[in-house]
Length: 84
Image 1 (tube, one colour):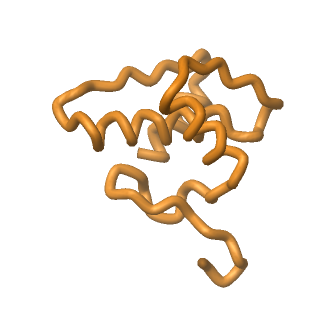
Image 2 (cartoon, helix red, strand yellow):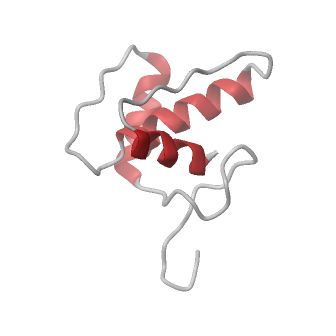
Image 3 (cartoon, one colour):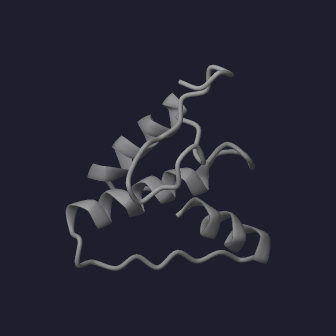
């Protein structure tokens, strides 16, 4: 926990203190591990974070695999870049 009571996701492939841990995102992530998923939640609630968590999980489980992360706008590309 940090001084402002936010808990961050900690993983060697994710920059420190860049992703706040949210229970609903973890629930979606766990569901997507065992099923094909289409994540539909409002803007700003963490679709990108869920995708990032899945990518990190895949790269951890299968280190030789590759992940392609696409985004339709430059701001989203920059957001993704800053998280890894």
